[in-house]
Amino acid sequence: MKGPRNKDTAMRRLAAQYAVAEAVASSRDPREAAARNLEGICQALDWQVAAYWEMETGTRLLSCTVFWRSPSSSSQDFEAATCRATLPAGIDLPGRVWQMRRPEWVEDVAKDSRFARAKAAAQDGLHGAFAVPVVLGDEVRGVLEFFSNRVEKADAKMLVSLAHAGVSLGLLMERTRVQEALAQSRAWMRLIVDSTAEAVFTMDLQGHCSLVNPSCLRLLRYEREGDLVGRHLHDLIHHTGADGKFHASTDCPIYEALRTGRGSHSDGEVLWRADGSCFPAEYWSLPLVEDGEVVGSVVTFFDITNRRESERKVNEAVTLKSDFVSMVAHELRSPLTAVKMSIDYVSDGSTGTLADEQRRMLDTAKRNIDRLVRLVGDVLDYQKLDIGKLEFRFKPEDLCRLIRETAEGFALMARRKGVDLRLELPDAPCAVSCDADRIVQVVTNLLSNAVKFTDKGEIRVAAVREGAFVRVAVSDQGIGMRAEDIPKLFKTFTQLPSGREAGGSGLGLALAKRIVEEHGGRLWAESTLGRGATFSFTLPGGR
Image 1 (cartoon, rainbow, N blue to C red):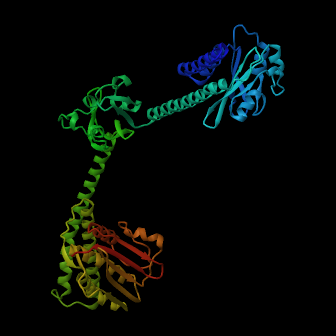
Image 2: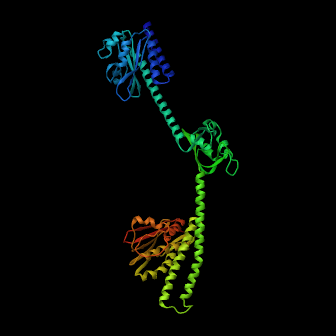
Image 3: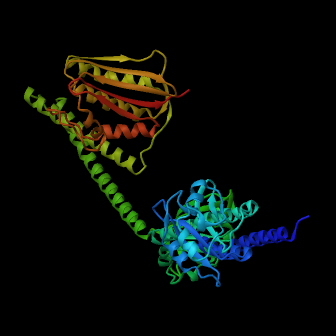
């Protein structure tokens, strides 16, 4: 049977365990829990002095941060020695517990040569001692140390029982660290939200506002966060469209994130201010998801009044430019046509016989008139492309046939320059769906440039099917160009210096590129200065 002393020891262990549990449960932070552990365990065991040692920040040393002694204890010397000490691993009782990562019991510290504070302990009548590590996983975060005014026999069960105090305190330290980190993170996130230029608000699942930032209050003209938090935002800021029609909250796009978990974006609606005015806004509404469940939404928005005004002015300027260009082009086309007809009338001898010099002058005038007519046509076509009014009549065509017919018009011109124009086209039709007139316009431009800038050698026109596309390449052995100049080719009214008067409007390649892109293809150039150039374009193949 257990004797009275054994029963008393068991009761003290239970009392100490209860003190540990109560200290951890009722404390707000690890240091408060440590202080309550020191007091509670000492009172349960009838011990007189205790200390809590922590790692000093930035060092590998222990220092006492909490010291407790019973009212009946006169341990001022030992308290002073303890609070003065800084202990490395392996030194004194706390240092050994830290190094070994396990509890240790000393029956009489006053006679222990390893105990650095033995003299102060003897002066204050302290003898028995034990210490337990405050641990989290394999890491020691601190040490709890206890002293009795009696010589105490080692109690292994007591050590095992009170080791739980160190584990509990370690867990509390980690929990506190995580809570502080979360609180700091939340505070930091709130600071970011409050500092951002975008207006931000969040909503719970019922559509009530849970957070707003200062930019949101400013744009909506509310004074305090409390004016919006807790209120149904659709009824306040999104109830009616710019046309005056009422929007039901069940159809509100901003609430889409709450209803379906999918984000939404709009720049075609208005939001309403506290004073009853409204403004055009661009907003994004995104779900807030936690553990796979939608718990709310976050909405960011801008006032786009200035953007809308800028867009209106730009559109007005574009329309004005388009109208002006169209007017000028049309006004030029009629007199140019009349001049050309007059030149043709004179050239065919209707007004009398012409001298050779007169005929050469008329031919020169006719070529320039033709160039101006083409320029006017290019300007009108490009202007129509810019505003989306250039019509395309797509139908099945044989691209190879279009190339052959177009090339016939350049064969004589090439031969006169001593240049061989070669076609490398498949015998089978190259079926595409295109506007034949527009593609002829593209091929004409590429062949015209090739003939202009090639003085000898050959010009090759090849077509080949590549997957779902047909690729056409026009290669010459002309003057070529630098690689860095190639992107400039496709800019409007741009011509590269070539050292010759080649004519042209500077619109042809830009227009050709746009036409090909409208067909779903692309046009590009490859060249080396002095070694010719290759212009290629692709068109989606037909069946």
